[in-house]
Image (cartoon, rainbow, N blue to C red; front, side, top):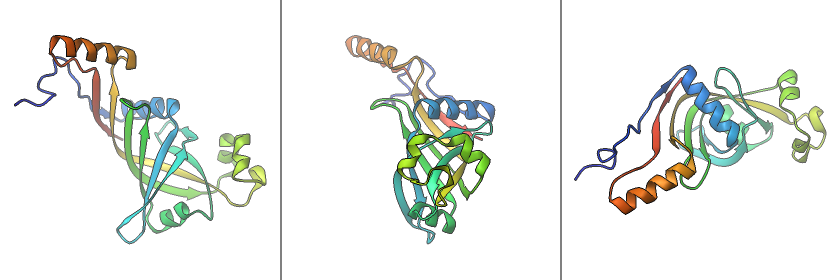
Length: 178
């Protein structure tokens, strides 16, 4: 029996390298900034996964977060800076997995650039809250699954494929090498 990819009449795999990979990350995170930020425990085991909002993707593909200095996440990153991010745009498409190295830092100019009033919910003293740190996540590898033409076209193609008995999947997937 052939795999689903062998039954696919269209190309559905495309690896992205360098600037193309950065563009994919920027576009994806720009429309879906919420992710699970996963750390390690510093002893070779899994740490925790927590929801985080990416604040920015810079021109090098670094993903920026705001975090509390006394958080378990910051403690785990001090012991082991490797981390993994999982983004999901919708129930059936738009998935992104990124591995990389996270650096916890304090940078007043960058914080000013990233700050939004709603962050005061967690940092009650505002931009001057001494607990504020930034996390610069530098991707080293990623993988994405998406649609080529958007959810509506993908849905129509799936319905037509089901009616005519042919795989008409509009998906695209591939590695992200930075």
